[in-house]
Length: 410
Image 1 (cartoon, rainbow, N blue to C red):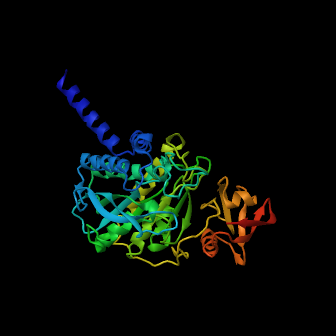
Image 2 (tube, rainbow, N blue to C red):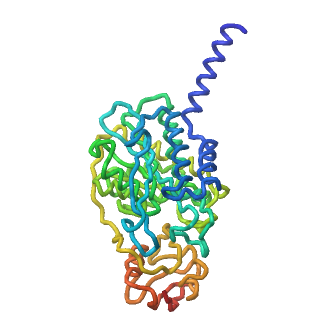
Image 3 (cartoon, one colour):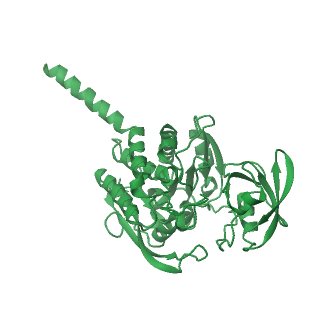
C-alpha cells in the first residue's frame, strides 16, 4: 500500500476511534443493563451472592478503564449492616450482613472531585417486603430501570471521561452503591467513612431510574437544584431537547441525600415513575437506551459548564418531612412522583392491598386522609405514618374532577 495512503488511512482510523470514544454508546449501555438485569443475577438483592456478581462486573469495567481503586479493599468498599428479620423491624435489628459499594477514581490531579453515583442493588427475590407486586415472594425483581439503568450510566460515564482524549479540571469518583433499597445504606456508610476527603468534593450527581424517558414528552425530573446557586441557570442552559421538571430539595428517597447531609451540593436525575416500579415486570425490554443517552449527554454538558466555575457553594434547602419513623401500615399504592398538581396522584394500585379493597383506582388523586390534607407525596407519607394495623381512614380522592370519599382499612 502507498505510504501516503496508509498514513491517511491511519489518521482517519485514529480520528474515527477518538470520535467514537467521545460518544456515549447505546450499545454499551444496553450490554450493561442486560447483564445486570438478567435472571442470572436474581434481582441483585443486598448482600446476596448475585449482588456480588454485579459488583465484580462493575469493578472489572472500572479496571478496564484504568480507574484507581478507591474502596477500603481494592475497588470494594465493604460495610456491615443488620438486616431486619421481618418487615416491622428496622435496620439495626436482625442478622448481620456484609455488603459492598464499588468505587473507582479518575485522577486528573485537580484540587476538587465530582462524584458520579448510582445504586446497583435491587429487590432480589421479593423477600424484603418492599415489592409492589401482589405476591412477590420468590419472583425475580430484575430492576432494569431501578437501578441497572443508573449503574450502566455510571459505568458508561466512567468509560467516557477516562477515554475522551482530554483532561477535565476535576477528578471523578465513580461509586455504585449497595443497600439503597434498604435505606440508602451504602451511600450513608461511605459518607461516614469516606475514602476521599469530603471537603474535596465539588458536587455529587446521582442517577436513579434514568432508563424510561418518554419520547413524546422528553421529560426528566432533576432533584437538588436548590443545593447550589448555579444549578438552575446551568440546567436551563443545557436542557436543549429535554423538558426538565426541577425540584429544589436536597433530600429525597435516593443516595444523593447522604451527600447533601454532609453539606455537598447534589443533583438527582430521574426519568419518572411507571407502573413497573418495584415489580418483577421492570425488565430490559422496556428500557429506552436512546433516552438514557440524552440524560448522560446532559450530565456531560453540566460537567463542562462547571469547569469554568470555582468550587460550588453549598446551599441548604427547605426539605420535605422525611422522618423515617417506620410505617406500621401501607395502602398498597404507587405514587406518581412526576405529578405537578396538588395532592398525590396514584400511578398504580396493588391487588389485594387496602387501597384496592377500598376501591382506589389508578389515576385517583389523594387530597385528604383522615383529618390531614394531602398536597404532595410527603404530606401523604406524614399522614400515613399516624395509622396502625386495623385502623380505618377516610380517604378523599379526586376522580374525573369529582371528589369521592373512600373507607380504607389497614
